[in-house]
Image 1 (spheres, one colour):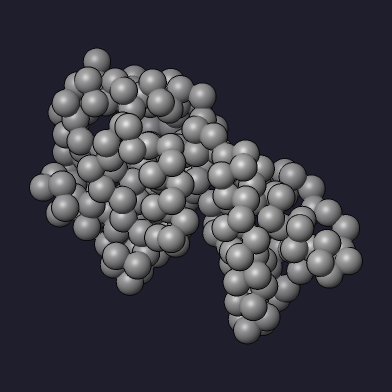
Image 2: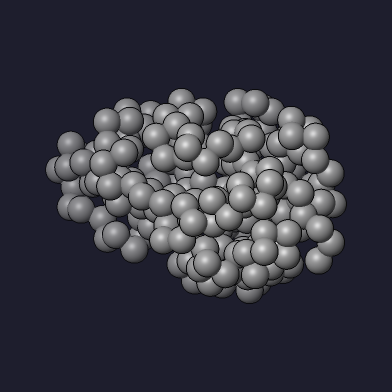
Length: 222
């Protein structure tokens, strides 16, 4: 691999284990409608697909039922706002990895589909000491991944070449976005892989089974 100058991460399922807080929020919402709790694995596998996917699953909604999905999505996000820091933690090894990135004088940032209001709050809580160079959310570009616009914006903000950058994510849309931006991709196999999928199907450049393994694909860190 050529020398990497900029390392970009997805947020949920890549840097942070946010599934427990979404699990609490979804089941609290279901309880308001006298519905039984969902299974944790079902929620975990959908977190990286966002609140639309979680709302659809929570109420078994057809994708065409857009108004009802949006109504429940807003309800879910209101609940999530009250618990989004309760049980969320960085994945084991992430803080050490960020320290090593900083010690190597490399730039790093975050490109996420998470709404800015939540992303800024969570990133400020966990990662300000590690000094991310950027946080790019859908509001910054008007598009969500798999659009490459967020990644290209991150490269622009940090004055980095896509060909000298790497993107790490736990969903096929992350890998697709990276490829469309002509950025090297690493699939985070430890993250929220949708049930029935394997990240080996995504044709990422590399697959990391743990955060500790990420640096083995980026010689610039060593």
